[in-house]
Image (cartoon, rainbow over all chains, first blue to last red; front, side):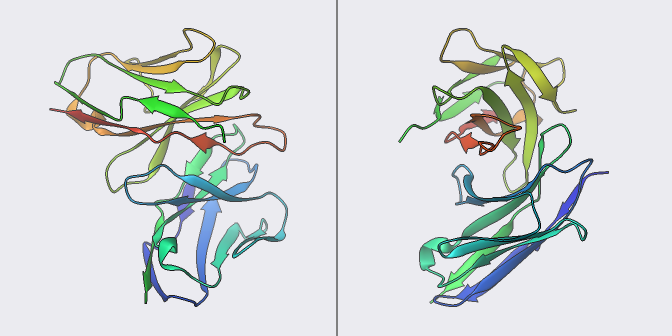
Length: 109
Length: 116
């Protein structure tokens, strides 16, 4: 079956660093996506990895290990506005996005 | 910046009624999608559409659902006879490509469907 696992909720402090992990099992693999979703709003694209390694984009970085079926999203210099759900999604062999349930990130001052 | 738009933002309907959710994808995009998200649950893929036909659909997308691109700009999702369990946020998304580098899917703001 197809499965995406990520923690349900994480808490971090403003200014700190947090790493959100994701493991995936999909039928085929065409890349791993991270999206941010604020409550009641649409998901917005953060990152895409299809090759192993780290992709850095400003305060956000995403890592992929295809052999381990593992990815993480690293958020640095956390700001209060980063409080949101972070959705991990794997694109399968049919180019469909299979979504995790999301990790709710709570930022405390 | 171009964006995906959806109307209405909120639709309330009675069980058994037909609803049409409307989307205007980004104009140069070729791939269109519908997703749904039941409150507090994960995003679920419904259907993808390319070159005026369905390219993929999920198990959720049964005979009660249909999609259409009636003109050059609109992309619609029709639910023929709504059920209580159809209550959810429905997101439309579009992308330039799916197999090439421009894979990013841009999401519309969603339509909240409430079936009573």
